[in-house]
Length: 98
Image 1 (cartoon, rainbow, N blue to C red):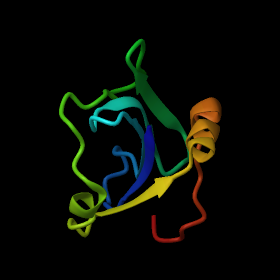
Image 2: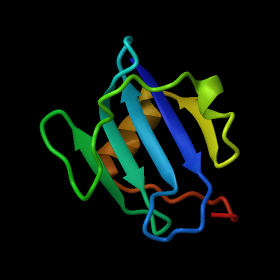
Image 3: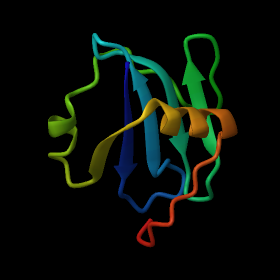
């Protein structure tokens, strides 16, 4: 498994600003969290989902490709980092420009 955190820079308050994904070796999402500016996170897994969050039906692009778009800042994270957000359903960054 691989775990990524994707920072999404935009001005739409109705869209998430952080996306966390657990990805299988074949590049498909297993679990996902979409976290909003206020820290609240919707989630999706193969069994359930909240809000409008859904697992991608396509393989996710490589990190390098995700980072080509200036709106996105991807980084690989640890399983423990992912599990903390998954468990709490909350992520509040101290990044001032969100």
